[in-house]
Each structure stands twice: as structure tokens, then as C-alpha cells.
Image (cartoon, rainbow, N blue to C red):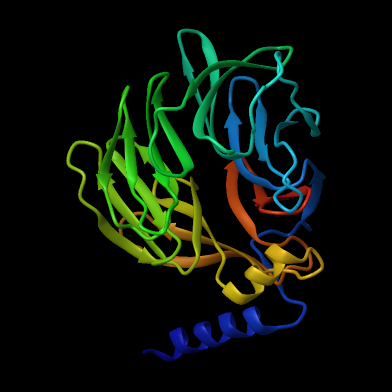
Length: 303
């Protein structure tokens, strides 16, 4: 191990263990934007210029909601449902897609009945379009190919990657809490939280290929054509304490990972004093947005 690499590794450890440490690839401070509690996942609607936010108050068990951040005005607000949801709604994963001139929002719902819900985006709010209830497993994150075809992660201990095309099919099994999912072309990327790995497979021939080891890996988004942003709950014990008590902070960690080599670098780190347990990092233009699992703000900074 070269001297430069050793010094870099020591610096990273010091960054992690410092009592008030924040590392951010930006000259701007972190801006906090108020949302509902538990803004775990984010999805960007490039047509409407809206950032959709899946909010679920996990500590209270109250009904979840979808919030929207208008990137033109920087105003955040809860998006109304155009009809009352007469079922438990606890949103977790999101994906935005477009078909036949409509904008759709696909949402994994981990209420009493595990399902995936499809909404049509209207000027007045969200119109429930379809409930996919004939699914298997515990849906976590989702990536849509069309209105009726998508892939999702099964977040059970021995979870799976599942392809839905009218029926749910396990394409990969025994993954150890499959978590984030991202599709680009024929490539499907996913993380496993228990095993702490980033994998790639193809849609045509599902076979997992390990790219990188990332302890406590969570959601995946695109940074650029060569790199991904992946969040990590690296400090397990602090995360567990944070899940029980709001006054216990949990560090936030975002990696930038090369899709081909698996090389990773710390893109954002905070000891939890600014924002705790970051679950998603999403790049939109020159802005980075970060969701978290329990609090009621998302973070924003300019790269």
C-alpha cells in the first residue's frame, strides 16, 4: 500500500471519527428544505421541473405522503391526492417515467398490504391510476420500464431482484436485503445492505457481478455517464440508535462510485449534526439533493 493511499485512508478515518466533522464537495453550506417526516427517496420530473419526495413518518406510523420541490421557485409542499387513499400508504421507493404524453410516478408502498402504486401527475395533484397488489416480497426501490413493466428490490433478509411484467418473477435470489436499484440501458445496478455490495447485472441475462463493497449500502442514482452516487449507513450501531431516538444522530455518507472499476471516493460525509442517515443523493444539474430516513428536511448543496 503506497504512502499516499495510507495517508488518504487515515484521513478518511479521522473524518469519520471527528466529533464535529463534515466533508462536502462544495464551497456552499448545506441548505435544508422542509418536507414531511421520513423523506427517504427522491425522483426528478424533468418535464415539470419537480423533485418528488417519498415521505413516511416511521417513528409515529402515521400515513405517508408525497411532497414536491419546485426547482424553479425552490418551494416545497405536500402534493395532494386527487382522491382519498382508502388504504395504508407508506411510500419508500420512487421512479418517474413518461408514456403516451403522461407523467407517471411509481411508488413502492410498504403498508399493511405490500404493493406498488402508480400515479398520474396532474396539475392539481396525483391521481391514483393502478395498484399492483399481485407482487411478491417486500418492495423497497423500483425502476420502471413502462406503465406495466418494472423491476424492484425485495428488502427481506434473503431478498431478491424482481421483474414485473404482469406477473412477478424473481431473477436473482438470496441477496441479503436488496435495497437500491438503477437501470441504464440493458444494465441493472443494485445494492445489498446486509452484504454491503454494489452489483451489476443485465436485463437480458440476469447474473450478478460484484462491482464494489459498500457497507450499509442504500439508494443508487446517476452522477454522470461513468459514475454513480450511493448512500451508505456505515455506522450500524449509531444508525440503530437513531432509528429509536430522534436525539441520537447517525452519520451521513455518500460515495461516488465508478460503474466499471468499482473505485469509490467519499463525496459527502457528515457526522449527523447537519443531516442524519442520508438515504438518497440525487444530482440535478449543478445541485445535489439528499433525502434521509427519519427527519423532516432534505439537504441541498451546489457542487
